[in-house]
Image (tube, rainbow, N blue to C red; front, side, top):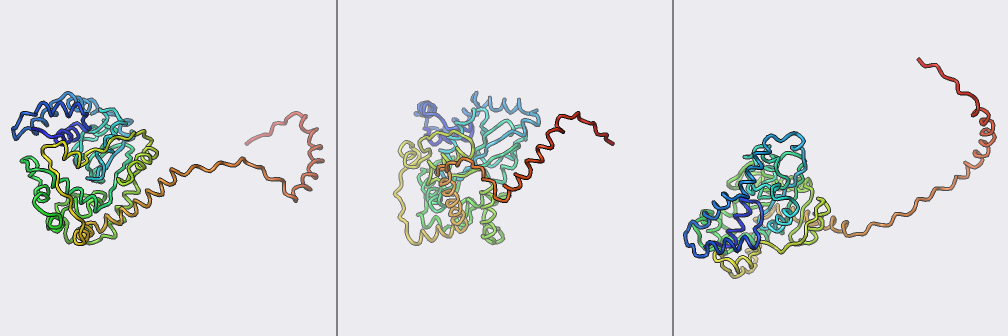
Length: 370
């Protein structure tokens, strides 16, 4: 048996695109009666052996001798922050590029690709650290999507907790921990408090220059929160644009204007309530009430992400207001009237102009030059 989320994840990680409903239905039907624990792996191998994936590799092979002009082309990079509406934006961005121009890499390993392999693509979309994107050649424009930090962490917890036990996912300790722990126990767990993708995870993704297994004394996010806030803010300002999950339609319109795109609305993707409804490998869990202790725990997990989001939201609202404010009509130019002190002077010049007229008809005399 294979779930819709398994199919979606396979398509996005291996082929770099969201599957159509026909794709999902075909694979669900194919593996309906297959109870092998390696079903997901078989499906992934099927994608790796597909003509679509093979064509991507052939394209990279053809582009290995790409010239300087190709290296200098414009490229768009979406820095996907987890549980911030990125899957929906990924699909909208993919609609703006031919499939062969969309890089299939979705993880933070762009540095493993050669410069000519990367030059074959125009769109990069994945859970990249910002520093990792510096491997991409050409004129790179970056964008991201932000979400209120405490809501983002709760969404991650609920997403992981909804997964039933599975041998191919339970290697990830946070999934197991979320399933086993009540919400307050989860966010007070030492592994969670020190995890680089949870404790100020957005700031980390925008500023990280090397991998970190855990946060602790000596790490800049712990020792220099003010400095890291400014560094993350500068990184955000350097992007071509960013959106806000809570203002999704305005984000789409603003990004279209800033990036010169024509993205059309699509239904939200990877929505937990819908995933639970259609997937046999996810179950609905009762929502956790927000208690004073949980709120305090989430505050402690986001001391830099929260002020960063507040700044970003204020700037976003300014940009939207400027976008929605109609331009003021331009008044026709009016030449100023001559000043009073110029009028007598104009009268004195008239006799002089009369004396110059006879000179205009005389032959031009050459002037010797050095």
